[in-house]
Amino acid sequence: MVESIEQSSVDSDESTDVRLYLPDAEGWHARVKRGWEKLYCFYKLPGQDYYHLLMGGEIYLQRSEEVVCLTCALRHGIVTTDRLNWQRHGRKSGASANEG
Ligand SMILES: [Zn+2]
Image 1 (cartoon, rainbow, N blue to C red):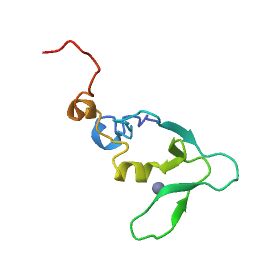
Image 2 (cartoon, rainbow, N blue to C red):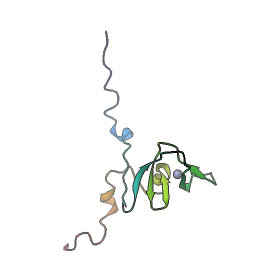
Image 3 (cartoon, protein in one colour):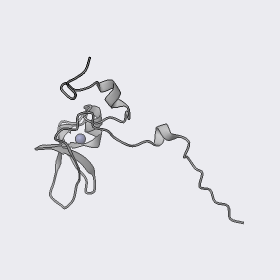
Image 4 (spheres, rainbow, N blue to C red):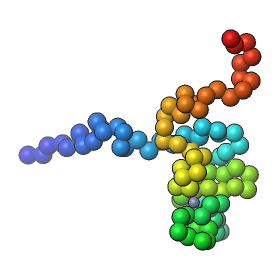
């Protein structure tokens, strides 16, 4: 007898939510590391005094020359897992003129 065990962890949304958000998305691009040329993260990890290498297939962010892995982007607050960040972040100036 074969039973399907598909309802594994659909409920626990909080822990499985790996979506990332850029509160200030201006100028940033999401990229995938491809090829063999070496690419280093713009930031250093805590306890390391060297720039760490991005792995092939790794998803990273780039803004002009600034290359940031997702770990560092999270640490530096470039990205957030907070889906409602735009509410906390407040409105940027000049979006809509006629208010209040
Ligand atoms: Zn990094």
